[in-house]
Length: 139
Image 1: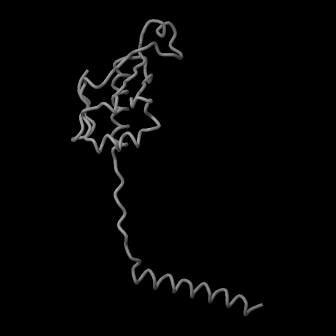
Image 2: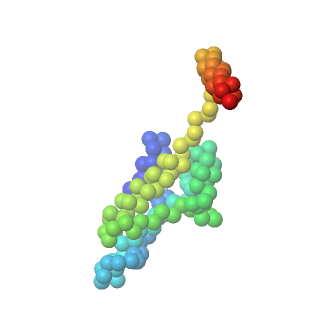
Image 3: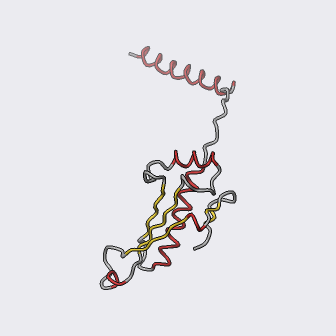
């Protein structure tokens, strides 16, 4: 196995990743009984040395529903009947999950409503009021 590059700042060392294989369920005929094509890729976020402490805290918070009780993230792939393709798929899934979870939202900048927007809003209100007033006058 090789190191997994998540972002330019984060690379998960191969030693922190555990990969296991099992027989995949579902259709496939006799192939199912012979080939262990299902891939389980595990990475323990809590014990990872690759993460900065701030990132680790953020990740544990963001992925809390996907982690086991000991802080392990498990990614499974049964996409194809080929073990190598499933291994690549599991690695790309892990990369996508961690990259997405590390994205922090930009803080909102407070802005003022522009003078033109206020003017348009008041003009719109006056226009609607005029329309309703004309309706009453015709009855």
